[in-house]
Length: 156
Ligand SMILES: CC(C)(COP(=O)(O)OP(=O)(O)OC[C@H]1O[C@@H](n2cnc3c(N)ncnc32)[C@H](O)[C@@H]1OP(=O)(O)O)[C@@H](O)C(=O)NCCC(=O)NCCS
Image 1 (cartoon, rainbow, N blue to C red):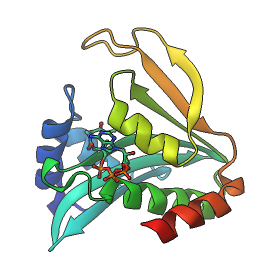
Image 2 (cartoon, helix red, strand yellow):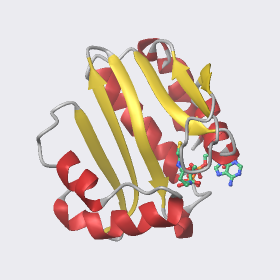
Image 3 (cartoon, rainbow, N blue to C red):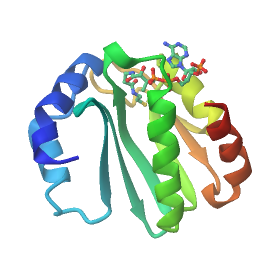
Image 4 (cartoon, rainbow, N blue to C red):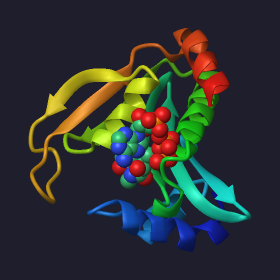
């Protein structure tokens, strides 16, 4: 992600979340201030249609944000972004991968499940905007999922 992508990314962010990240959060994220933070963008005809953010610190990976433009959903874009990111995490020596997902977000849960994420914990009333629970999903060791992931890639 570069500065020129941010206005399109913000539009997707606002279309995707009830409590969207601010412009400042994205700008700081790509500024180089946080060397463990990775901000990737997926483009169609040069325009951002998707993005994913994750951190890798001492083998622990945390996926902090993922969204696809409503115009490009159900086309495998999120699968592609997630697969690329998991590859990158592996290269960076990642092992555990964590993320939080809203209990009501069935689409995202199905996506993550396909990649082998399972529930590690439930945080009651985690989201302050509506009091919703968060599922903490994880992959115990990303270095061990190469075969499963290779199969996903060849399917799609
Ligand atoms: C969740 C999200 C990222 C999925 O993006 P996408 O590009 O449409 O997903 P894909 O096309 O790669 O779909 C991958 C799988 O996810 C699941 N999935 C995606 N959208 C779904 C939906 N609306 N209903 C049910 N399952 C869905 C399916 O298992 C799908 O596989 P399939 O198409 O083979 O059935 C997208 O809907 C989005 O941006 N939502 C708003 C933001 C968000 O919730 N981000 C995740 C925060 S944790």
